[in-house]
Amino acid sequence: MSKVKITKYDDGPFVIQGNFELVDGSGNAFQTSDTIAVCRCGHTKTQPFCDGTHKACEFKETSSAR
Image (cartoon, rainbow, N blue to C red):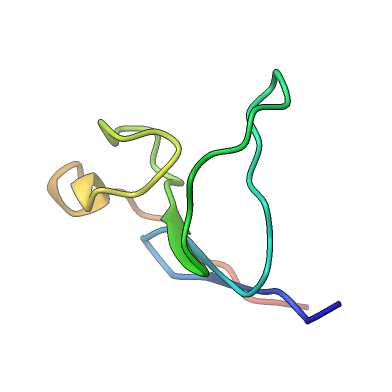
């Protein structure tokens, strides 16, 4: 199995890269490519995917790995 990489961008989305499957609460798979951006601000119109709205709503969240 290949390694999946998830990058948390400050003030932005989680970007997921690799061979993975994203499923909803009912177990249905979303149609995805091998790289997607998942919303963290909660304001996107394309949930669960990022549409860049975090910039307009001035979403702020920065944290570092410990």
